[in-house]
Image (cartoon, rainbow over all chains, first blue to last red; front, side):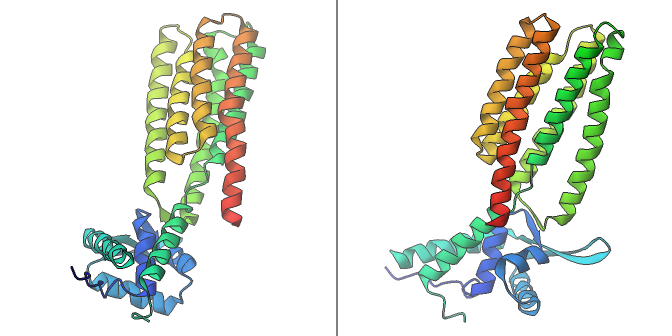
Length: 94
Length: 195
């Protein structure tokens, strides 16, 4: 039996970190993701956009204390992809 | 970068991030300490005012404590909500449990007080219920035990007719069910925040 291919959208350090963080919460804002991933604002923003385009993450633009606030949550498609990714990783590790 | 991630690194990254997200829970110790202190003060006030006012006047310390606690909790919760960058399912469950608790508590007090029945034991039963569930959700044993203490105190309070004994039972319940678990929870929260 061959190994299942790893999802290229998730097989990226920062994108995987973002999705893993969102698995544990209902929703998280940009600063929450920034703090826990240690990424730069620019890179984080780019990767969130890629996850959004893949349909893995839902992004809501809101205001917090009169400042723009980006809220992210995991979409059902993202959760399914994450579960499949974890299963594939486990398969690789035997 | 995409090809650099090995299977083991991926798994480690996933575990690390999920663990970080789990630590992002609301600080609840503040509420247990606030309400524990306020309700002990109210019970002592009721004891000291006994015989000096009518039944409804005796309830005044509870009303004052409830108003102060409600306002302070609301302001603190709103501020904490603004600071928190993420909301967890655990926060939502605990929030709903205590919201339902407030509704049932106020209804119970209204019904029992209008019938001339002391709502004290029922208040402790309900308090034990919400504390026990919160402890189980947080997997924090001192709060689970606190819930059990409240249930035990409710039973004792139901049969205790002496005002001093009732006051002591109620205050002991608050100390063991709210204050001590609250202090232990605060230590844990402080530890997590500085970890």
